Length: 265
Image (spheres, rainbow, N blue to C red):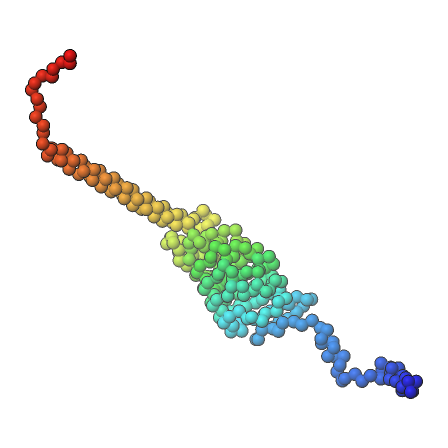
């Protein structure tokens, strides 16, 4: 019986691979599983790829915020000509390969210290022109090695802006179009900011003068308090001395004997 069982099982063991039934479309499905998966392109945008370089074009698509499904291997990201008003902190920190970021022609009003976190090393161009930016924190752009475009923004020229621009790589083609919309020094309203800074103008001197005046006022207040305390102390002592003298005068005086003192034996 064992030999019969072995004889019956042998044909099953010797079945050739060509006789196995492969589901229709099986190789195609296996091929899809082997292909690398790529993040979907944001809705309304185009994500062309050329020679392994991915570009994300979302220009003039009516965006009101930065898309969250941007491919992580994007090298170029164009978000210009939209209606973006703010950029959350770390909105681009997952885009480690990004080289160019175009945010021009939006309605961005503020930039935070962590807005461009994660882009310090690789970014080469940052376009923030034609927005509504008034103030730039000192550390918001300082860590970037990219060229920055800031023209056509209603900037408020003050010490903080001057410190933010210190060491920043401004795009030479648009640097002259950076102007003071408002300023702590009224004579520079409407004037090109870079020309003023190149001429040696300092917007921090006004800040320093204000600080010096505040320090002088504080010192004067302390000095007045010390003088008032000294005057009070002197007057209090004079009053105590006067009362003590009046007390001494009120004491009865002892009569003085007229007998001469006898000499000692």
